Length: 256
Ligand code: AMP
Image 1: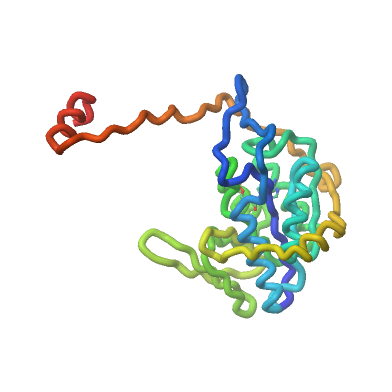
Image 2 (image 1 turned 90 degrees about the vertical axis):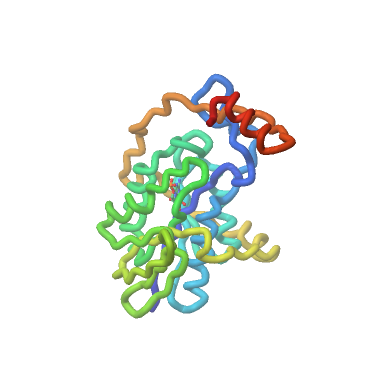
């Protein structure tokens, strides 16, 4: 087997940070905020590189759509072992939420995959900024390919791929025909830390560029974010001496 694997990756606000709403705007504050590779995309890169290390994949190409800063995560993917990295350059505002809608991303990826002639596309199951969980499914629909979402194990078995998914109360294994779109769940693997020498080498590697116009895709938004609000601040907790006091408090608050 010598599959050509494409891994779409997204630069998002670091998962450890709490996003803040920009004062007076229906947008997230991005100034002075740390961005990193979406964790599910990191898992996707790791899985693709492992497939190449096992001799199942011939090439691993990462691709990211976004403004100039998307190049950062593409470099990370090269340091992790991707062979090539391609930037679909857009003039959208700093990533997060709907700067580039899932449908627009799926259309860009469809055009890219057609051009590349890939056999497998491995995506994150969701981007942790907009939590859309849409791009993989839309891409499979646009390509007319098989799809196996939320994978916790991927094994290539001849001309088919066995994908295990965690479902309510157990696991399900699907046998999917190639070409295939897979989306990654958290337990699929533990991504490697890139070695310093690989990080240094990745800095010198070329990031290829293309654009929505070159791919013939209209990325104009179709959705409008009407409002965005942070959750109400949590009220402080209090200790009660015994159950009777707890019940009295709950009654007073109208909870029971
Ligand atoms: P979403 O449907 O937005 O939650 O994203 C699911 C997956 O689609 C991500 O984990 C990425 O693999 C891919 N994806 C989303 N946005 C982009 C983007 N701008 N560029 C490349 N891949 C993306």
